[in-house]
Length: 258
Image 1 (cartoon, rainbow, N blue to C red):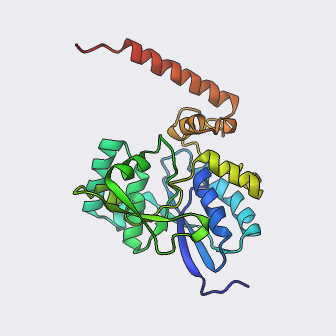
Image 2 (tube, helix red, strand yellow; image 1 turned 90 degrees about the vertical axis):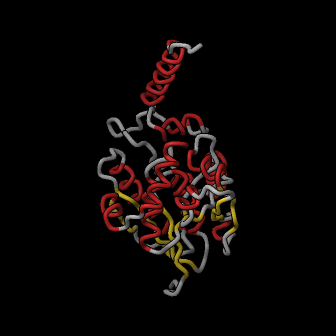
Image 3 (cartoon, one colour; image 1 turned 135 degrees about the vertical axis):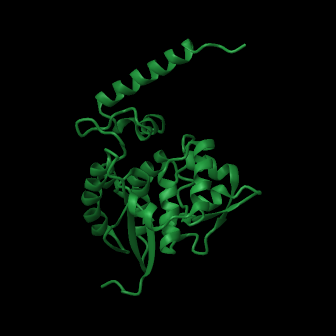
């Protein structure tokens, strides 16, 4: 029976590819208790699919885990904004959103972790399209965490590398272990370790159509561009190609400024 004094490790989990891969890695670490955290946004169409994916995935991970995997802690977007306001973090996030088009979830993660007084892993992966990684690379240095090899990956925290502390304020409560891992690399390792049946249950689309990926939201575009095209149904691939055509046409028709 697992030791009830196991060290607790929190991870922000969405039921998606990157965070599920990291959850599987952590699950193989003896002597820890993993506490997944999920932020509910009832306005986002993909939330129900993410929650369903997590319900399907949890038994799989528990069945192969050496760590103790706890139930998912659920938090609501509105409650976070109401209960854990922080003007400095929110202002920093707004500037990052304007400069890097950073997703709103990172403001919520920062407010939640600071409000709870905890650190949590966040699966910011190695990808050219990752706005979070772009912001971190631009404004921060990476410092290895004390337990930097937990779960078989080097875990980092961020510190500002100049006078601009915006990214440090937003990402400062997060531990980052996926910065050197692409989706394709995660797939290779998952295949070697027999994790693919579980990884195939992950979800990524923000605006599903008839229960399937849409092909045009940002996570779907990422899948198409980062070696995950095989995850997209034909309907989503067609919508993606149509989006590319419309984007190219709009660019050609855009008035030129002299």
